[in-house]
Image (cartoon, rainbow, N blue to C red; front, side, top):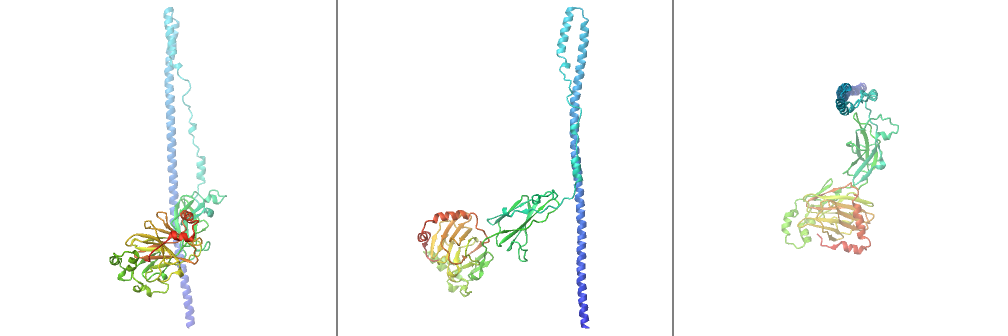
Length: 516
């Protein structure tokens, strides 16, 4: 009995599923039918509107042509009427003069005859008949106004529905990747197919779609980004700027659109987008640093000594900035960070590292301080060379740029417990360039395009980006290519440092400083 019930349940379940499937199918067919009816009505309306526009255009053009013919007819009539009137007057004058001449012939008095003959001669000289041309001023035909609509009539007979445009073809060799922007170039549909008979119709616009991916040709995985769109493109190329290159490739495709509809997309093309992309390694962050995406902020955990206003009052009379900083910052035994994980910075080292190592090649990223910042450092370090309580720039394995506007503004380059004070306004956007192979580390004021400082060394261990934040916060921009303007700084840096020994260069770049 139970087996039969179970079998019946399976049959019922199968029937239920089939019923749902049929119901969905019927709904889909009904939806398609409704869409077909609506679409056909729209197309019919558009066709009627186009025909009415043709009628209107033909009537307007016919009215223009009729006006031209009427104007020309009136002009010619006026010219001919004028000639006719002048001719009649000349003929009447000629007849009068002829009568006078005939009467003169019968005069017998010689003196009277000579006087009359002289008058006839003068009147003949001035007679209108001798000044009037006998050629018509205008022709009597109007054949030049005959119209021929044979081509237009043939065009109307060829009239058909506007076809969907063929897909363009992306010219991969002409695509450019530069300064976190991609320029995509393509050929129009008419040039893609040399045998095209023009049946793809005129192209009015292009639409481009792109998405980021880790593969250059495989289908999109579920976790990858959806297509981003760029519409209403009128040229055969477009530049997409301000991109973050946080994937290996960007897939692009393009399609043409005419008045009727958009055509099929072109074959997708994968454009490689190499860039240095990293984030904050939250496991290394000091307990009083809060990491949120690309931003890190200093958030004290209730220690009274962290209040900068209190520290300013307590240390106002100190003569040395280093002593001020040391007395103003809570010691390691006053912070909860000393009880954190083994990899987490503690004490006065309000530091966090990047989560991607650099072992070769060129890398670039940028930093912006938040509005309420007081002090920060940015640079690179050997991960193994930094202890939990170490600060950036105070060891042989860390290099940084330190900025402060606590009590007074200062900017300095730090390495191996030495510092070089930099005479430049505090930057609001700092670019960091690291060439691991050449040992170049450059800091750029991006807004003013000014080289702040350049380290020249030889890196021997994997590097990581490193940041120190106290009182305030910073945000970083990663996934950036090495910008094109870096070429000028690198060239200038090579000219400046070539021929200098390492010891002389070290003395030139750094002076001893008191630890803060």
